[in-house]
Length: 362
Image 1 (cartoon, one colour):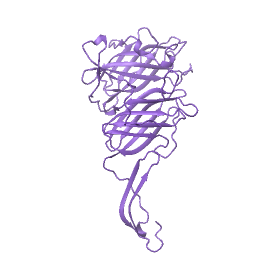
Image 2 (cartoon, helix red, strand yellow):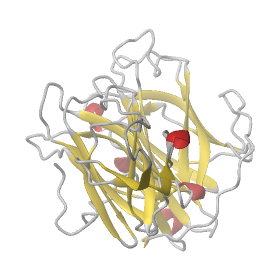
Image 3 (cartoon, one colour):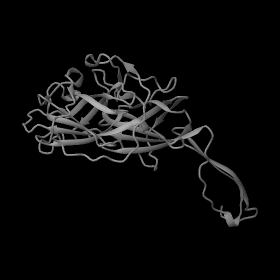
Image 4 (tube, helix red, strand yellow):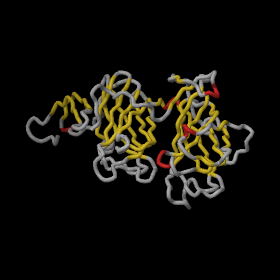
Protein backbone atom coordinates (compact mmCIF):
# COMPACT_ATOMS: atom_id res chain seq x y z
CA UNK A 1 0.00 0.00 0.00
CA UNK A 2 1.03 3.64 -0.29
CA UNK A 3 1.15 4.28 3.47
CA UNK A 4 -1.19 7.30 3.38
CA UNK A 5 -4.40 7.92 5.26
CA UNK A 6 -5.49 7.23 8.82
CA UNK A 7 -4.83 3.65 9.89
CA UNK A 8 -2.52 2.84 7.04
CA UNK A 9 -0.98 -0.15 8.80
CA UNK A 10 -2.31 -3.39 7.33
CA UNK A 11 -2.10 -6.98 8.54
CA UNK A 12 -1.83 -9.17 5.44
CA UNK A 13 -2.54 -12.83 6.00
CA UNK A 14 -2.13 -14.27 2.49
CA UNK A 15 -2.78 -13.87 -1.23
CA UNK A 16 -4.30 -16.65 -3.32
CA UNK A 17 -4.00 -16.64 -7.12
CA UNK A 18 -6.17 -19.03 -9.11
CA UNK A 19 -6.10 -19.68 -12.89
CA UNK A 20 -9.60 -19.64 -14.33
CA UNK A 21 -8.88 -22.02 -17.23
CA UNK A 22 -7.25 -24.87 -15.27
CA UNK A 23 -8.22 -24.30 -11.63
CA UNK A 24 -4.59 -24.35 -10.49
CA UNK A 25 -3.77 -22.06 -7.61
CA UNK A 26 -0.82 -20.63 -5.73
CA UNK A 27 -0.93 -19.36 -2.13
CA UNK A 28 1.42 -16.56 -1.00
CA UNK A 29 1.41 -16.45 2.81
CA UNK A 30 2.69 -13.46 4.84
CA UNK A 31 0.71 -13.15 8.13
CA UNK A 32 2.45 -9.94 9.28
CA UNK A 33 1.79 -6.23 9.64
CA UNK A 34 2.71 -3.90 6.81
CA UNK A 35 3.46 -0.29 7.84
CA UNK A 36 5.12 2.64 6.13
CA UNK A 37 8.53 0.95 6.34
CA UNK A 38 7.26 -2.28 4.77
CA UNK A 39 4.66 -0.98 2.34
CA UNK A 40 5.96 -3.21 -0.48
CA UNK A 41 7.04 -6.84 -0.19
CA UNK A 42 7.86 -9.79 -2.47
CA UNK A 43 6.29 -13.16 -1.73
CA UNK A 44 7.01 -16.64 -3.03
CA UNK A 45 4.32 -19.32 -3.31
CA UNK A 46 3.91 -21.59 -0.35
CA UNK A 47 4.68 -25.26 -0.80
CA UNK A 48 1.27 -26.75 -0.13
CA UNK A 49 1.20 -30.22 1.39
CA UNK A 50 -0.05 -32.77 -1.10
CA UNK A 51 0.67 -30.47 -4.04
CA UNK A 52 3.15 -30.78 -6.91
CA UNK A 53 4.45 -28.36 -9.53
CA UNK A 54 4.35 -29.94 -13.00
CA UNK A 55 6.57 -28.43 -15.70
CA UNK A 56 5.23 -29.62 -19.06
CA UNK A 57 7.32 -29.23 -22.24
CA UNK A 58 5.49 -29.93 -25.49
CA UNK A 59 7.76 -30.46 -28.53
CA UNK A 60 6.44 -30.17 -32.09
CA UNK A 61 8.38 -32.18 -34.69
CA UNK A 62 10.77 -30.71 -37.24
CA UNK A 63 8.69 -32.04 -40.15
CA UNK A 64 7.09 -30.16 -43.02
CA UNK A 65 3.67 -28.74 -41.97
CA UNK A 66 4.09 -30.21 -38.47
CA UNK A 67 2.53 -27.25 -36.64
CA UNK A 68 -1.14 -26.80 -35.73
CA UNK A 69 -3.43 -23.81 -35.22
CA UNK A 70 -5.94 -25.88 -33.24
CA UNK A 71 -6.52 -25.65 -29.48
CA UNK A 72 -4.40 -28.25 -27.67
CA UNK A 73 -5.36 -29.86 -24.37
CA UNK A 74 -3.86 -32.54 -22.16
CA UNK A 75 -4.67 -34.79 -19.20
CA UNK A 76 -2.35 -36.95 -17.08
CA UNK A 77 -2.66 -40.04 -14.88
CA UNK A 78 -0.44 -41.05 -12.00
CA UNK A 79 -0.27 -43.73 -9.33
CA UNK A 80 -2.74 -41.84 -7.13
CA UNK A 81 -5.22 -40.49 -9.66
CA UNK A 82 -5.74 -38.22 -12.64
CA UNK A 83 -5.18 -34.55 -13.48
CA UNK A 84 -6.87 -32.35 -16.04
CA UNK A 85 -7.79 -31.88 -18.74
CA UNK A 86 -5.82 -28.65 -19.13
CA UNK A 87 -6.09 -26.27 -22.06
CA UNK A 88 -2.55 -25.49 -23.21
CA UNK A 89 -3.08 -21.93 -24.32
CA UNK A 90 -0.72 -19.87 -22.12
CA UNK A 91 2.93 -20.76 -21.56
CA UNK A 92 4.79 -20.42 -18.27
CA UNK A 93 6.05 -16.95 -19.27
CA UNK A 94 2.51 -15.74 -20.02
CA UNK A 95 2.76 -15.89 -23.80
CA UNK A 96 0.24 -17.45 -26.16
CA UNK A 97 1.16 -21.04 -26.94
CA UNK A 98 2.59 -21.50 -30.44
CA UNK A 99 2.66 -25.09 -31.70
CA UNK A 100 4.55 -24.32 -34.90
CA UNK A 101 7.11 -26.60 -36.54
CA UNK A 102 10.15 -27.46 -34.36
CA UNK A 103 8.79 -25.48 -31.39
CA UNK A 104 8.94 -26.05 -27.63
CA UNK A 105 6.17 -24.75 -25.37
CA UNK A 106 6.64 -24.89 -21.59
CA UNK A 107 3.69 -24.85 -19.16
CA UNK A 108 3.64 -25.01 -15.36
CA UNK A 109 0.69 -26.37 -13.35
CA UNK A 110 0.48 -26.48 -9.55
CA UNK A 111 -1.85 -29.40 -8.89
CA UNK A 112 -2.37 -32.24 -6.45
CA UNK A 113 0.44 -34.76 -6.15
CA UNK A 114 -0.45 -38.05 -7.91
CA UNK A 115 2.85 -39.93 -7.58
CA UNK A 116 4.85 -41.26 -10.50
CA UNK A 117 3.17 -40.53 -13.82
CA UNK A 118 1.75 -43.48 -15.76
CA UNK A 119 0.13 -42.07 -18.89
CA UNK A 120 -0.82 -38.91 -20.71
CA UNK A 121 -3.59 -38.09 -23.16
CA UNK A 122 -3.02 -35.14 -25.50
CA UNK A 123 -4.88 -33.87 -28.54
CA UNK A 124 -6.47 -30.93 -30.32
CA UNK A 125 -9.96 -29.79 -31.37
CA UNK A 126 -9.24 -30.05 -35.14
CA UNK A 127 -10.37 -26.45 -35.68
CA UNK A 128 -8.59 -23.71 -37.61
CA UNK A 129 -6.33 -23.76 -40.65
CA UNK A 130 -3.74 -26.51 -40.70
CA UNK A 131 -5.19 -28.59 -37.87
CA UNK A 132 -3.00 -31.66 -38.46
CA UNK A 133 -0.20 -31.76 -35.87
CA UNK A 134 2.98 -33.86 -35.76
CA UNK A 135 3.86 -34.19 -32.08
CA UNK A 136 7.41 -35.25 -31.25
CA UNK A 137 7.10 -35.72 -27.50
CA UNK A 138 5.96 -34.34 -24.16
CA UNK A 139 8.31 -34.14 -21.17
CA UNK A 140 6.86 -33.61 -17.68
CA UNK A 141 9.09 -32.68 -14.74
CA UNK A 142 7.82 -33.03 -11.19
CA UNK A 143 9.69 -30.07 -9.74
CA UNK A 144 9.21 -30.88 -6.06
CA UNK A 145 9.83 -34.61 -6.42
CA UNK A 146 12.71 -33.92 -8.88
CA UNK A 147 11.57 -36.62 -11.32
CA UNK A 148 11.08 -36.39 -15.08
CA UNK A 149 8.92 -38.47 -17.42
CA UNK A 150 9.03 -38.62 -21.21
CA UNK A 151 6.00 -39.32 -23.41
CA UNK A 152 7.35 -40.04 -26.94
CA UNK A 153 4.86 -39.70 -29.80
CA UNK A 154 6.47 -38.98 -33.22
CA UNK A 155 3.13 -39.30 -34.99
CA UNK A 156 0.50 -37.18 -36.73
CA UNK A 157 -2.52 -36.20 -34.65
CA UNK A 158 -5.19 -35.77 -37.29
CA UNK A 159 -8.75 -36.92 -37.85
CA UNK A 160 -9.02 -38.78 -41.17
CA UNK A 161 -11.65 -40.77 -43.02
CA UNK A 162 -9.54 -43.89 -42.54
CA UNK A 163 -9.69 -43.63 -38.75
CA UNK A 164 -6.89 -41.26 -37.80
CA UNK A 165 -7.35 -39.59 -34.41
CA UNK A 166 -6.65 -36.08 -33.20
CA UNK A 167 -5.47 -37.33 -29.80
CA UNK A 168 -3.10 -39.93 -28.41
CA UNK A 169 -2.77 -41.87 -25.16
CA UNK A 170 0.94 -42.30 -24.39
CA UNK A 171 2.66 -44.33 -21.68
CA UNK A 172 5.15 -42.58 -19.39
CA UNK A 173 8.88 -43.36 -19.42
CA UNK A 174 10.99 -42.60 -16.35
CA UNK A 175 13.86 -40.58 -17.83
CA UNK A 176 16.29 -41.81 -15.17
CA UNK A 177 16.05 -45.23 -16.83
CA UNK A 178 16.85 -44.06 -20.34
CA UNK A 179 20.11 -44.52 -22.24
CA UNK A 180 21.06 -42.00 -24.93
CA UNK A 181 22.25 -43.37 -28.28
CA UNK A 182 23.56 -41.71 -31.41
CA UNK A 183 22.02 -43.22 -34.56
CA UNK A 184 24.17 -42.86 -37.69
CA UNK A 185 22.30 -43.72 -40.89
CA UNK A 186 24.87 -44.15 -43.67
CA UNK A 187 23.17 -43.60 -47.03
CA UNK A 188 24.13 -45.51 -50.16
CA UNK A 189 26.00 -43.57 -52.83
CA UNK A 190 23.44 -44.69 -55.40
CA UNK A 191 20.77 -42.25 -56.61
CA UNK A 192 17.38 -42.61 -54.94
CA UNK A 193 14.54 -41.76 -57.37
CA UNK A 194 11.72 -42.04 -54.79
CA UNK A 195 13.06 -41.02 -51.35
CA UNK A 196 10.87 -41.59 -48.30
CA UNK A 197 10.12 -38.77 -45.89
CA UNK A 198 11.07 -40.76 -42.80
CA UNK A 199 12.58 -43.93 -41.34
CA UNK A 200 10.71 -45.96 -38.73
CA UNK A 201 12.84 -48.68 -37.17
CA UNK A 202 12.47 -51.38 -34.54
CA UNK A 203 15.52 -51.91 -32.32
CA UNK A 204 15.97 -55.17 -30.37
CA UNK A 205 18.47 -55.53 -27.56
CA UNK A 206 19.18 -56.63 -24.01
CA UNK A 207 18.20 -54.65 -20.93
CA UNK A 208 19.90 -54.67 -17.52
CA UNK A 209 17.89 -57.79 -16.57
CA UNK A 210 19.25 -59.56 -19.69
CA UNK A 211 15.77 -59.64 -21.25
CA UNK A 212 15.26 -58.96 -24.94
CA UNK A 213 13.50 -55.61 -25.34
CA UNK A 214 12.20 -53.76 -28.38
CA UNK A 215 12.03 -50.02 -29.07
CA UNK A 216 10.48 -48.13 -31.97
CA UNK A 217 12.50 -45.20 -33.33
CA UNK A 218 11.19 -42.62 -35.82
CA UNK A 219 13.48 -40.30 -37.80
CA UNK A 220 11.92 -37.84 -40.23
CA UNK A 221 13.74 -35.87 -42.90
CA UNK A 222 13.23 -32.12 -42.20
CA UNK A 223 14.32 -31.39 -45.80
CA UNK A 224 11.99 -33.91 -47.43
CA UNK A 225 11.25 -32.83 -50.99
CA UNK A 226 14.54 -30.91 -51.38
CA UNK A 227 16.88 -33.38 -53.08
CA UNK A 228 20.05 -31.29 -52.68
CA UNK A 229 19.49 -30.78 -48.93
CA UNK A 230 17.77 -34.06 -48.11
CA UNK A 231 19.11 -35.97 -45.13
CA UNK A 232 18.61 -39.11 -47.22
CA UNK A 233 20.71 -37.88 -50.18
CA UNK A 234 23.35 -40.27 -51.64
CA UNK A 235 26.51 -40.66 -49.56
CA UNK A 236 25.21 -38.61 -46.62
CA UNK A 237 25.45 -39.70 -42.97
CA UNK A 238 22.36 -38.67 -41.01
CA UNK A 239 23.09 -38.50 -37.27
CA UNK A 240 20.39 -38.16 -34.61
CA UNK A 241 20.21 -38.82 -30.89
CA UNK A 242 17.43 -40.90 -29.34
CA UNK A 243 16.86 -42.12 -25.79
CA UNK A 244 16.13 -45.85 -25.46
CA UNK A 245 14.51 -47.30 -22.35
CA UNK A 246 17.07 -49.42 -20.44
CA UNK A 247 18.69 -50.58 -23.70
CA UNK A 248 22.08 -51.91 -22.58
CA UNK A 249 23.11 -53.82 -25.75
CA UNK A 250 21.41 -53.42 -29.15
CA UNK A 251 21.44 -56.72 -31.06
CA UNK A 252 19.21 -56.30 -34.13
CA UNK A 253 17.34 -53.66 -36.12
CA UNK A 254 14.37 -53.82 -38.47
CA UNK A 255 14.29 -50.63 -40.58
CA UNK A 256 11.32 -49.45 -42.63
CA UNK A 257 9.86 -46.22 -43.94
CA UNK A 258 7.11 -44.02 -42.48
CA UNK A 259 3.48 -44.80 -43.27
CA UNK A 260 3.11 -41.84 -45.62
CA UNK A 261 5.96 -43.26 -47.75
CA UNK A 262 5.22 -46.97 -47.28
CA UNK A 263 3.68 -47.56 -50.73
CA UNK A 264 6.10 -45.60 -52.93
CA UNK A 265 9.05 -44.28 -50.90
CA UNK A 266 12.36 -45.93 -50.13
CA UNK A 267 15.65 -45.29 -48.33
CA UNK A 268 18.99 -46.58 -49.68
CA UNK A 269 21.19 -47.53 -46.73
CA UNK A 270 24.71 -48.94 -46.44
CA UNK A 271 24.62 -49.40 -42.67
CA UNK A 272 23.22 -48.15 -39.38
CA UNK A 273 25.50 -47.51 -36.39
CA UNK A 274 24.20 -47.16 -32.82
CA UNK A 275 26.60 -45.61 -30.28
CA UNK A 276 25.96 -45.58 -26.54
CA UNK A 277 26.55 -41.98 -25.41
CA UNK A 278 27.59 -43.11 -21.92
CA UNK A 279 30.11 -45.83 -22.77
CA UNK A 280 31.05 -44.86 -26.33
CA UNK A 281 30.45 -48.46 -27.46
CA UNK A 282 29.27 -48.70 -31.09
CA UNK A 283 27.12 -51.39 -32.70
CA UNK A 284 27.29 -51.78 -36.50
CA UNK A 285 24.35 -53.12 -38.52
CA UNK A 286 25.15 -53.65 -42.25
CA UNK A 287 22.11 -53.29 -44.52
CA UNK A 288 22.79 -56.04 -47.06
CA UNK A 289 20.32 -55.11 -49.77
CA UNK A 290 20.69 -51.33 -49.28
CA UNK A 291 17.04 -50.70 -50.24
CA UNK A 292 14.62 -50.13 -47.35
CA UNK A 293 10.91 -50.07 -48.18
CA UNK A 294 7.60 -50.82 -46.48
CA UNK A 295 6.80 -50.75 -42.77
CA UNK A 296 9.46 -52.10 -40.41
CA UNK A 297 7.31 -54.90 -38.95
CA UNK A 298 7.12 -56.52 -42.41
CA UNK A 299 10.89 -56.53 -42.96
CA UNK A 300 13.53 -59.04 -41.93
CA UNK A 301 15.78 -58.23 -38.96
CA UNK A 302 19.39 -57.15 -39.49
CA UNK A 303 21.76 -58.53 -36.85
CA UNK A 304 24.75 -56.71 -35.42
CA UNK A 305 28.04 -57.57 -37.12
CA UNK A 306 30.97 -56.80 -34.77
CA UNK A 307 33.44 -57.46 -37.59
CA UNK A 308 31.85 -55.02 -40.06
CA UNK A 309 33.92 -51.88 -40.78
CA UNK A 310 32.34 -48.72 -39.47
CA UNK A 311 31.44 -46.28 -42.26
CA UNK A 312 30.11 -43.51 -40.01
CA UNK A 313 32.40 -41.03 -38.21
CA UNK A 314 33.46 -42.01 -34.71
CA UNK A 315 31.26 -40.60 -31.91
CA UNK A 316 32.61 -39.68 -28.50
CA UNK A 317 31.04 -40.73 -25.21
CA UNK A 318 29.59 -38.23 -22.76
CA UNK A 319 29.79 -38.46 -19.02
CA UNK A 320 26.38 -39.42 -17.72
CA UNK A 321 24.87 -41.62 -15.08
CA UNK A 322 24.25 -45.15 -16.42
CA UNK A 323 20.62 -46.24 -16.70
CA UNK A 324 19.11 -48.30 -13.90
CA UNK A 325 17.12 -51.46 -14.45
CA UNK A 326 13.37 -51.20 -14.92
CA UNK A 327 10.17 -53.13 -14.55
CA UNK A 328 8.61 -54.17 -17.84
CA UNK A 329 5.72 -55.84 -19.60
CA UNK A 330 6.79 -59.17 -21.07
CA UNK A 331 5.44 -60.49 -24.39
CA UNK A 332 6.42 -63.56 -26.46
CA UNK A 333 9.89 -63.49 -27.99
CA UNK A 334 10.60 -63.46 -31.74
CA UNK A 335 11.29 -66.91 -33.26
CA UNK A 336 15.03 -66.37 -33.54
CA UNK A 337 15.26 -66.03 -29.73
CA UNK A 338 12.78 -68.66 -28.68
CA UNK A 339 14.41 -69.15 -25.28
CA UNK A 340 14.21 -65.49 -24.25
CA UNK A 341 11.52 -62.90 -23.60
CA UNK A 342 10.78 -59.64 -25.34
CA UNK A 343 9.81 -56.49 -23.48
CA UNK A 344 8.32 -53.87 -25.74
CA UNK A 345 8.66 -50.14 -25.18
CA UNK A 346 7.11 -48.80 -28.35
CA UNK A 347 6.57 -45.03 -28.32
CA UNK A 348 2.86 -45.40 -29.03
CA UNK A 349 1.29 -48.39 -27.23
CA UNK A 350 -2.34 -49.39 -27.42
CA UNK A 351 -4.48 -46.55 -26.03
CA UNK A 352 -4.04 -46.25 -22.29
CA UNK A 353 -7.05 -45.70 -20.04
CA UNK A 354 -8.12 -42.09 -19.64
CA UNK A 355 -6.10 -40.40 -16.88
CA UNK A 356 -9.17 -40.06 -14.67
CA UNK A 357 -12.72 -41.28 -14.87
CA UNK A 358 -14.83 -39.23 -17.25
CA UNK A 359 -12.00 -37.03 -18.52
CA UNK A 360 -12.22 -35.88 -22.12
CA UNK A 361 -10.04 -33.43 -23.96
CA UNK A 362 -11.50 -30.08 -24.87
